[in-house]
Image (cartoon, rainbow, N blue to C red; front, top):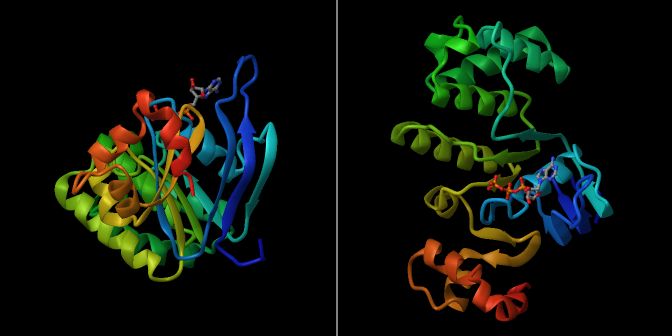
Length: 246
Ligand SMILES: Nc1ncnc2c1ncn2[C@@H]1O[C@H](COP(=O)(O)OP(=O)(O)OP(=O)(O)O)[C@@H](O)[C@H]1O
């Protein structure tokens, strides 16, 4: 891989958790290029979070190599927020961890709080936010340092319809600045709206890497990503599925 900012890859990566008798993910290989927004799909326990944590550098692969260039931010699905900090204090704290100046943090926070309709909550303790608002703040903490690579695990859980629409629009706008996003979600409507390319993990193995349209064509499904995905991950089709990997 050339040293292009915003590129990331896993090469033959396997992870076996301590005490486990099998791999959580096995022999995973893919590259994401600058400017791509890619969906990471799979059933519960398939290995999506393990893959994201590997890319984020939080988990050391048992085997294989991880390569990332550029500033990367990972927002887990259950990001811990300090209860006794206000929304603004949380952003000042996170911004400082990223080496940002106070003026920079406040400017960017003003902008992002406005985008995500949280301006009125800036002096509220995080413990007083609703579930959806906490998840919005988690996403804002990720966007605050303007990373080149964003890894998102179920980023819009608890968002209402308008917030989901605004967030999708914002992420597409964010992408036009040549960012790279890997988005893990069970919300297939969100994935279809944002991503052309998807990675599908099934029982720890990458069984599809390609365009959503290609998957639908291969599975003989006209319009519905859910049906195509269910056909792909149907255990009875396991043999055929391994042939679909590009
Ligand atoms: N800390 C851990 N220790 C041991 N096993 C783990 C650990 N974290 C995850 N696993 C196991 O690794 C496998 C993959 O889990 P992972 O969390 O990556 O799945 P996922 O695709 O993100 O699932 P979900 O959609 O439910 O969030 C599962 O079998 C899970 O039980």
